[in-house]
Image (cartoon, one colour):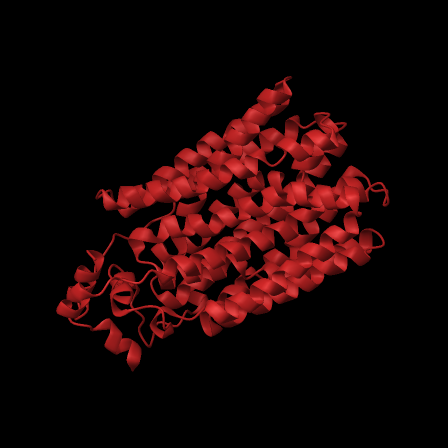
Length: 450
């Protein structure tokens, strides 16, 4: 096969050829897909204050509306991982984006609570494969030494999407009405589908990947070499304690992170007294700062691995430090100054995102086969969505029970961060790094120095 020939190019030939860098273009497109996904899902939380002028709903029902997306999003995580392992991201990813773009645009036809819930359920089905797909892409396209940084690049798409949703949806809602916001951002997804079908192939099949880049991608993946008998068995995944460690660790992390995706606009506008103009100017700050924090966490994790720290420490140092610092969100309801509240929220969001890249690299770090990475990513993201669907409902109930006070929700978020840190620190077991020892070793070593 032609891809095998490329992988065994001689060292002499490799020395004369500059290694291609197609993997960075692939992860950039993955990041754009996640940006669109988060722009679509965050649009409701930004539009909700405008929608409540038309639909009268209580805080408890608002929590249900904000949570409804995550019901199907969570339910379809594990099947999505299985589909990605079976059919690959080239097929599943564009189907998912096309589906969710339709349901985003349909929100413009909402006539009340029931229709909003139906459209959000459809959106959740479509977006379910997005994170497992990106995790699968990184595991296929990057050597282990670059996976945390690569994960940070696609993961920053969620912060970019959240940040863009605030000024874009606010501006469209003010000048054209909230319905137009959903139509316009729904159209963007279809443009992405065309681009993905044009650009994405597996590394061994991509015309713009040369032998040197292919060897470099494989250079520290020996323990992940695919074997004919390595197809994932659900029984093995369900009885593997690492599956549940990844699932529960992400569940508690998302219990805190979901605040920024759901109740955050209402907190600033209704509880802290921000005007719509003030919110439009500063509301995106936590998400914008989190973009750089996400990338920084990935860089530090990979640098620690390159500095001969164990894989366990290289991944867990940014995870634990980020989650523990993110618990500072618990102080925000006790601070009178809105300026200092924004500082706390920015720090918490940035720290939360700092942990993200290393967490997203974990399915590939604990999997015993490349055919399990998508499935493990599905389990992990299922845990994320358990947190995401529980958090907005819990916050709505806290607000209803305690006359709109955000003390309970913020302490709830802080404790969740600390529990998540404990799970990652004490339960997750990351494999040591191993290098190729087969006939591609010489090529890999030469490619790594090109």
